[in-house]
Image 1: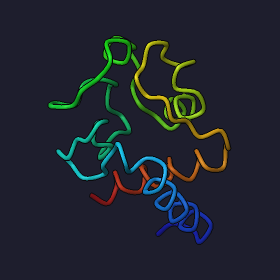
Image 2 (image 1 turned 60 degrees about the horizontal axis):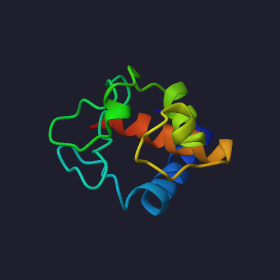
Image 3 (image 1 turned 180 degrees about the vertical axis):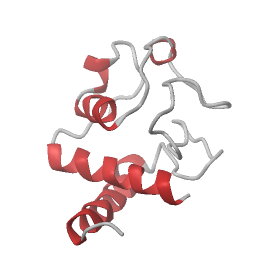
Length: 110
């Protein structure tokens, strides 16, 4: 069971995901939108989810999604992957950490 602080961070991450990410991304497996489903994203190679649309830059990036790579990508998607089509970033480190905690919590419970 996560600590109260981690549980609060994941709850904040869920709210942020819904308001900042949920327009383009789903957290449900197989439910791609403009961007790919982020269900089980941790440990997945970037640009490889079946049925999702990706920029050539992301498909060829060689990135495997981890907390660190997601953090860098959310901080500035086009700096980490020049040519990516994702334009939305989260500048605040606490917001990025909360979204990552939410994604991590979802990958272990679903």
